[in-house]
Length: 432
Image (cartoon, rainbow, N blue to C red; front, side, top):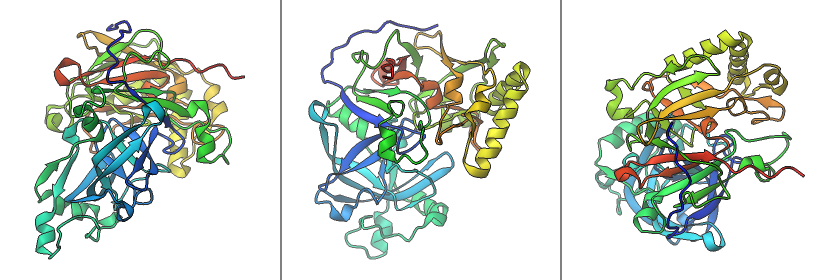
């Protein structure tokens, strides 16, 4: 097993501590960022599975922004089963408070004009992955041919609705590609922060004790609160305790890891197959660490073997999981907490390649893959699912595996590929 003790490093430049919350996106953490001269704040999903900084138009109107710089670029991004498209602009951003306040000039932002994705009450996405995922296309020639002067994508000149995304994507792909500079990469390149960020994660889905509670009320629940530290590291003892375990990042397409095996309780280990070579350019490895996923989306054979092991322990276990999925597909609701509590659910252990070439064992407790009072008061959600249709044989290791942990995405290690350092989260104070 790969483990290393906490080590103090030079804290200069200091980490920027930002409050995060499950209250708005419900199944992902958001951070508040103010856009443009108006300084209106937007709650953006923290997503290590993408790189784009993107905002919905209800939270930011470029026409009212004195800092706006238009471009000829447009962007379309697909997230699993969702997608969106819109123009790229540059503007000023501000976030954080007091000693942790920060502003950025000329940040590259995409404004969503058409989307086939539900952001719930979040206002966009703060992508935290590497620059290779943040690409746009230069529409200048198309706009000039249409007589546009200046040939800019804002105001948005294309009639694209949610049903036309595939058609527009074909036009977009025919234009020159442009690589954008993600916000976090911009901060690191300017020396504002070190090239790493930490996230304190409590759970994967919003904790709800009263279905009538609004988002600001949900935000006051300590179980719905987290912390992000831009540039932060091991020098955040108030956020974590114990030793770090270091997961090796094997490729910087995403935060790509090598998932070796999964174990259900005390059952024999389930070997996880390597990535099919045909997907090497598209996926890079057989697993990614994704803060934007509220599920553990597992390679089909691995998922099926886990469900078979649950059945071997107690046939009622997979039966209740199936009941959840039937209920969720019909109504977006979960099953009663009492039904989950009546059964003895095993821990799941995920074995990943460690930074030293050994293995890291990360345990996912039943409370994290079956979170209680999730989305609705008195309901539980089952957060294991098989790979998406058309997806490579790659597992998406989302928030259930990070729950109750402090996860440090250290991109400065190992010549730029990096590692993800994971330690137990500092426990919440006892109630009362």
